[in-house]
Image (cartoon, rainbow, N blue to C red):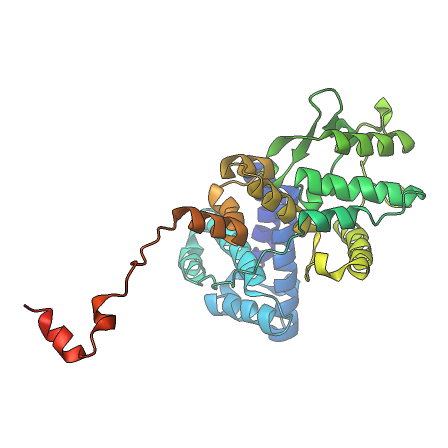
Length: 338
């Protein structure tokens, strides 16, 4: 097979990931983007167009150079670089069974190490900050009422931005106890309870948008002005607009570097500060491992201080130690051996 790279890559993305592994659409899209960039790199830097790439032309250095190009030319972070490398590793794990003659190449690609990524500080709102943010939408307008329903649901459920964008009315259960079904990463589904205040806002929005009708059950819950599903960029645009307004109103309550994920971080931190066990927060957020959830405990300086205060034992002596009262240090040191 002359141009075998295109064959195996197409099979990997089109059949293996979605059909055999059962990867989510987001995972397939992320892996696809990794190789779209790789094809662009090969054409711009190696002079080899996509249709002429062969596996025998590739080696570990080629992929290592590609990852360096992502960092230096496209200014990707080490974390993004690691995501791209994970996609490359996944492709070559597939390839080593489909084409064993390239096993040596696969092993060399596996030896490309992941970079240590700097752990960024978690950016989140205080409770007062969340109240300020959710007070920004203009409820006299249709878009303002939609935006309040969107932002309050993102915070109240701790949902990821893509999870919010993918929601449909059939995910909502208004009967007591009110819940919402969230389809998350890795095709995992979790059921999250909704508070009465959130139910009231959401039900009012869905009634106004005629989303309670049975024929609307599978349509997007949140739409743009054209009636299409809100994209990740669309949700980010809405949040950024109200973050700017909130910052103008009270800059002390709005941290820097706020993103859609900050609402999820905020909910997790508030649950932790209220005494909710990390195991329950893990399930609420849909984390695979509690180690992921532990970042909130590490970031909560208030809980650290309270824990240290509870564990503190006063070991300070009532009187000065003998060595402080002894003017002759040499004499005191000699006395220690007697």
